[in-house]
Length: 274
Ligand SMILES: *[C@@H]1O[C@H](CO)[C@@H](O)[C@H](O)[C@H]1NC(C)=O
Ligand SMILES: *[C@@H]1O[C@H](CO)[C@@H](O)[C@H](O)[C@H]1NC(C)=O
Ligand SMILES: *[C@@H]1O[C@H](CO)[C@@H](O)[C@H](O)[C@H]1NC(C)=O
Ligand SMILES: *[C@@H]1O[C@H](CO)[C@@H](O)[C@H](O)[C@H]1NC(C)=O
Ligand SMILES: *[C@@H]1O[C@H](CO)[C@@H](O)[C@H](O)[C@H]1NC(C)=O
Ligand SMILES: *[C@@H]1O[C@H](CO)[C@@H](O)[C@H](O)[C@H]1NC(C)=O
Ligand SMILES: *[C@@H]1O[C@H](CO)[C@@H](O)[C@H](O)[C@H]1NC(C)=O
Image 1 (spheres, rainbow, N blue to C red):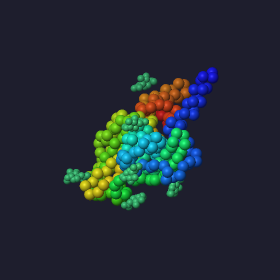
Image 2 (tube, rainbow, N blue to C red; image 1 turned 180 degrees about the vertical axis):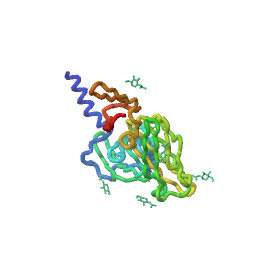
Image 3 (tube, rainbow, N blue to C red; image 1 turned 180 degrees about the horizontal axis):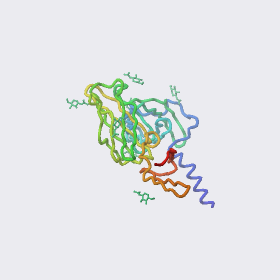
Image 4 (cartoon, rainbow, N blue to C red; image 1 turned 90 degrees about the horizontal axis):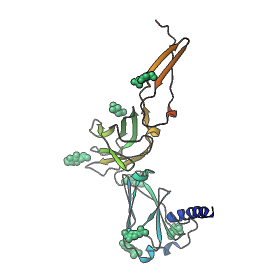
């Protein structure tokens, strides 16, 4: 009994310390803490890449450098590596096409020495050139039909491509739909290997020979955010038994349970039987 509570309290105390220092009062003067030089943030679909100048001193190696991404995702940096990559496909927790907020923190053990300003970094490319209005419709479980619109400021020759990610696996578009200018503005997936009950990371990249085009990304939850159009119930049988009429049917094909999501309507038109 004593042992297990010891273990429990150790876990409770040590777990947060391993990833963050106490966010109490900043205990040192700003300028006495060595900071990372040339700190850069590059945003691309599904990835955040941080880089800094590699002139790391011994005293810097003894400190702990953390970044807080999008106000809530604290990551520890190994300063000697001079770069850090965050793979959004793994967690599918946030999007970056509208920019990413980054806050640097420096700790020594559990002591917070420095909190930097929260800075917002933007992806490269012409503003308003990314795909917009992304939405999907799922028909009869096996067809997923997605569409988007061309960015307001996108160059005329823009070409978009769509990739979905789930469980670190990419699902490329199978069949694009084009607008009258030949620009890809939709995609049909036939029997995609997607679990509609969990999150999907959506990437729409844009290419042009005229200018650099911004990407679009989205955390998409097909059965919550999408429109699901199912087949009607099948195998409807009617059985008359003296004064009773029994109506039975089978539920349409679905990808995942639970059944409790189903609601049926019965309309009985009282017409004379010939
Ligand atoms: C660090 O210094 C800057 C400018 O001197 C100041 O604006 C900022 O509030 C300081 N931050 C902390 C955490 O002391
Ligand atoms: C690292 O190099 C930059 C120039 O790239 C310089 O400004 C900075 O003072 C150097 N920092 C350290 C800790 O040596
Ligand atoms: C940090 O990176 C360096 C260089 O790649 C490596 O030798 C070191 O073991 C890493 N430290 C930690 C704590 O992972
Ligand atoms: C693009 O949009 C961002 C945020 O809306 C703005 O800060 C930036 O100045 C814009 N860039 C250009 C070139 O218009
Ligand atoms: C997908 O949606 C588009 C536009 O909403 C429509 O024109 C197209 O016929 C649909 N394709 C399929 C296979 O349902
Ligand atoms: C860019 O130009 C090349 C060569 O003319 C062409 O093959 C390619 O399709 C163009 N790309 C786009 C996105 O327009
Ligand atoms: C339709 O329902 C009946 C009665 O429940 C059953 O015997 C039959 O196998 C079902 N047919 C199909 C195609 O599911």
